[in-house]
Length: 267
Image (tube, rainbow, N blue to C red; front, side, top):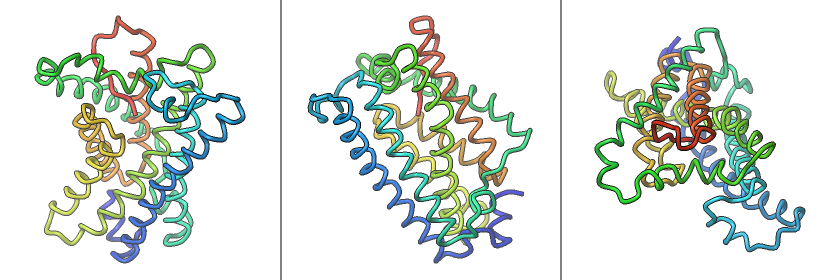
């Protein structure tokens, strides 16, 4: 059952008032994630004995693994918190029913969707790359920042967080809380216009949330694709698989290095 039919059947958010509350929880979760990330980084730095100023570490092209892990866990804590508030306070207390956290075998179709997404992003940037100075270096900087300073076990940890953690928590937040609340709010707009607005706005917010100007077009495009998948299936399973596959390609490209044939985005 598509998300549109689920909302028509009364699935949370049950009405526009609840949808506005979900959006408030999303804002609180996003801001809270930033605060938690800063707190986790400070605590981890104190435990590790690293006396380097945190502002200086944040500007490094290859931050230490402990910094990346602390930041991710903090952000994801905020994302999960918003989903927990949405379903626990203004829902049925079921992630499965309220947010569509369900998986089926057909969700494996997400694998080719994720892989194709990387090639689509590469194609989008073909006409742009010739007009941007040091395009390859600048475009791959976020991926390099995420994985470049990690080796061995540390790299394995980052890879697992990127391929497993990011798809789960980010999809729970963007396609679980945000898309569903926006779909309820825009649902009364004639025909296909409302759902399209919800899908596009969710994708754009997904791109903006990563704060990467050059990568924004690719991130927003794939975010819209993930939103379409979630809206059509009414679940998070297939787009979590697609998101994981998308990131796996980027992690594999980081391992292959100069042998990679395409610029890869990761988030």
